[in-house]
Every structure is written in C-alpha cells, then in structure tokens.
Length: 354
Image 1 (tube, one colour):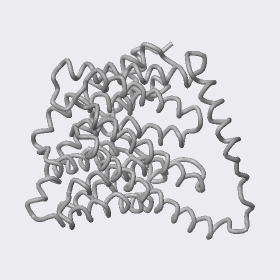
Image 2: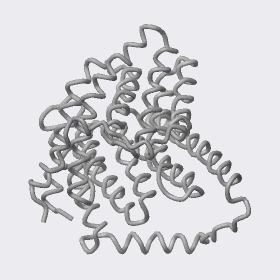
Image 3: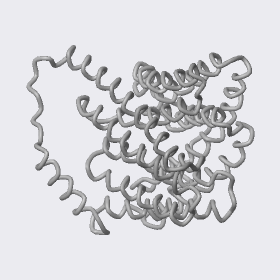
C-alpha cells in the first residue's frame, strides 16, 4: 500500500536534481531528432508562415519520443503511429475547444486510448501518449473544420517527416551492424488485426493492470481539465496535459515525474523568456536558440526528466510566442495549470496505488 512517506522519500536533495548519468545521454540522437523538428519550423519562418512551421514542428516534436525505446526496425512505425494519432487529436481538439463538456469527453477518450496502448509495449505506450497531448495543445486555438484539417495535415506531415528521418537512421545502423541477419517474421494483415482486437478486448475494464490504469488516466485527465476550467485558468489544457504525462502505473514514479515536471516547468519558463527575446535579433537568432533547447531536451530525455522538462518548456514557450501567445503572458497561467495537473495526478496515484 502506498503511503505519503513514499512521497517524502522521493524528494531529492537540490544537488541531485540536475544529475544526468553520462551513459544515458544521447547527443547524436538529440541532434537527429531536433533536426526533424527545426527544419519544418525554419521553412515556415522562411515562407513567412510561422503558424504552419509551428504546427509541423509540433507534429515532429512529440513523435520523436516514440523513437526512444524498442527495437530499431520498429521505431519508424512507432513514430508514424504517434503522428497519425496526433493529427486526429489536433483536428478533434481544434473543433471541440469551444464546447467544454464535449472537450472533456474527448480528452477522457484519448487518455483512455493512451492507457490501453501500454498493453502492447513501452514503445506503443509512448507513441499513444502523444495523442491526448496533441488534442490538448490544439485547444489553445479553436478553428473551423477546414482550418482544423489544415493544421492536422501539417502536424501529420511533421510527424511523418520525423518518421522518415528515423527510418533512414535505423537503415544506416542496420546496414553497418546486421546486414547479414535474417529478416524478422511479419504478421499478415488479418493476423495483426486479430491480435490488435484481442489485446484491446483483454484490457478493457478493471480486470487487468493496464485496463485499470487506462480508466484512472481518463478520469484524472477529465478532472484536471474540468478543474482548470472551473478555476478560470487562462490555458486550462496545461493542467490536463501535465496530469496525462506524469500519471504512471507506479505511485513512486508518478511522484518523481510530478515533482520533476512542476519544477522543470518553472525553470523552463524562465529559460523561455530570454529565448523568446532572441526574436529582437532576427528569426535566425530565435531559431538557433530554440534549436539548442530542443536538442538538449532530446539528449537528456532518458537521463533526467527534470532537465528534459526544463528544455522542453523553454522550447514550447518559443513556439507559443510565434503563435501570438506572448511569453510573458503565459508564464503564470502555465505554472498554475502545471501545479494543478501535477497535484491531481499525485492524488490519483494515491487513490488507486499499484
């Protein structure tokens, strides 16, 4: 049974918060994945359509996390899976943004799907976790069906571009290391569909660990969004986004993630302010600063979640600034919503401990 004493034990000393084992750092992967994010953003800037560049970058950014785990040849598929779900989430989120009750239902449904994704593999779990994230981010700017479809198209294009880059990297690695190995057996379409349906049926409801977590994730996301709306927070989706990202099947991991996410967001917002200020020196300076931030974020992703949250938040502040949400105006609302979502996730982890 989990107790609050575990939460206290999870509090690390300040000197250990930013520790990152060198063996867990991945600078080359960070550079590759950051290139997949920054190229669409740079193209949008060159064409004078920062919004399109930001949408494509938002598709490539989370999709890249699906390439962090699993066997090499399956990584491009995981990235593509994340991209397709994110495009759908973007379309739904942009349309439902002005209908709070309907939006909460969609958030719960996408969070539930993300929880069920963990029943397949850790790689699929990370890919599926990006779906509700894309839906929530899309609610920041409601759109007409046509514009929502355009935005979803750019998100999909950015994600598939990232998938293509990952596929090229995997092919190069495979050519250099296991060119002579036998190919993996492949499932037929019918066999794959049967396996997919059987796995989903097995984990729907309360009977399995993954089924319980999926329901808890859906309820927690819905509560976080509803609470943020009732409190009148300027950017309520940040609360639900934080809850979805930090709530894990294990209580102690949820505690660690929540603390790192809240602290990393606070520091990352401070980092994002000078990054956004680089716009005064021209688009090139802004893109270079943003590129450095997201490269570092990808590099430390597996080594230190606090540092990852710092660099990711700084990068997202820049993206929001490009969409017209001034960096200075989003500091307090984002921090309050992150604190709210992290707290709700912590409560949920105690309510049904693993």
